[in-house]
Length: 215
Image 1 (cartoon, helix red, strand yellow):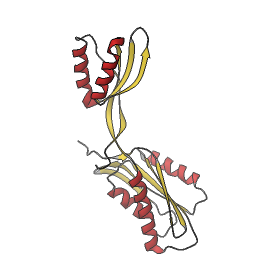
Image 2: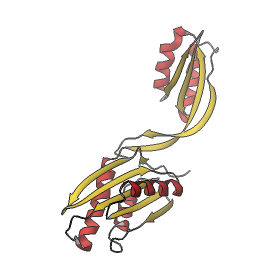
Image 3: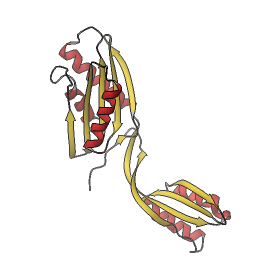
Image 4: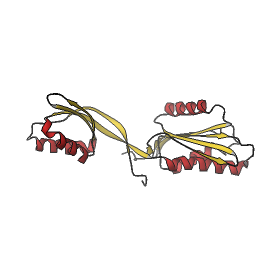
């Protein structure tokens, strides 16, 4: 079984000043090399007037990863590699970062650059919420009105969520459950309906759910 790993829950940005140079770190989830390249190109376009836009990414996680970094004109080894090293140590996979620098008129030296790019990447990682990709079933279910509140409660108890409710003669509910939780919901549904109700799986896909930041 592949090793589970966390990913950024959403795109996030953090900015700070180092000896008058402005560093803007943008972090995002990416799930392919193509997505990572598109993200990097978008940030470079947004900050086209910046002195440098330093990218790094890790696609995959655990022992199966694709990595990339670039110094984008900074002295060799002072920008991209420090950013990538922080990504490696973060426990995150499927992640890309671009650290944008606006030169402030004072040279930082190689040691200062390494420190600045390391800190910029670490700060944005520390600010990011974490998620995990899990397989889910999207299901549909028609129920009588008198069972609505009971089914809503059951959905929550089995780690599911209500995506939609359509009110006609009966209520047609669209629900989503982690695959591992669905059988428990289905069994309880049979019990409360004396075997009359059954949820039908209409789609199985992966989604991102929030996880405890301490993992």
